[in-house]
Image 1 (cartoon, rainbow, N blue to C red):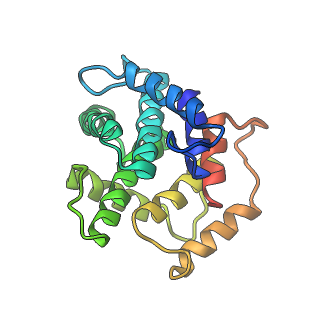
Image 2 (cartoon, helix red, strand yellow; image 1 turned 90 degrees about the vertical axis):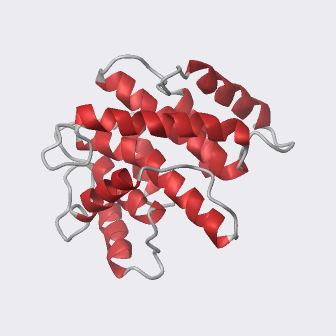
Amino acid sequence: TTALALQAFFRLGYTNRGTHDYAKVISRGARFLKRLQQEDGRFMRGSSSRSLYGHAAATLALGEAYDGTYSPLFRKSVQAGLDAIAVLRASHGFWVEGTPDPILSVWMALPVAVAVACNARDEVRGRTPKLHVNEAMVDAIRKWVARRSGPTIEHQVALRAGVIRLRVLLGEDFGESAGLKEARERHGRLRPDGGSAAIDMADLSLGLDAFR
């Protein structure tokens, strides 16, 4: 919940810096997440869905904090979280055909994609990228996303939106990619389905991402 709340601030351009009303709240939330991180880079122990989603959300939140500040205070935690995702991938089968939980694959891919975007901006500005991202992992994510970017519409609203956001973070541009623009427009016309009237906070976060 803390990680999702922080993402709301970061995506509106607020960070822990400055004199705005939310700076102290963001600082406290970020410090809380950093204190949760263990020596192996994980934010939550165990292999339950809750712990895996929690790790992905926390790594993403701190990745967005780093994206907004380029502070070394966040970089170390983000790097450890990314390294943990690389380790978790081997045992949980993220980004492969038939993965039992494609939404979890999206959440695990998002912090990796944010790191890729940060490094790309560093290169554009003539700076050395600071985050190490496993290239095999990035390649697996790109292929997994490509398989879900055709005319076939995914049934889960979070999966549709997550794939759209991943495509943007990995370098596609709405102004240049007709396919990406069409995917977002389709997403906007569709209602959540799957038999449930409820969308949890994580799904809502991904749903809003499609319109950023």
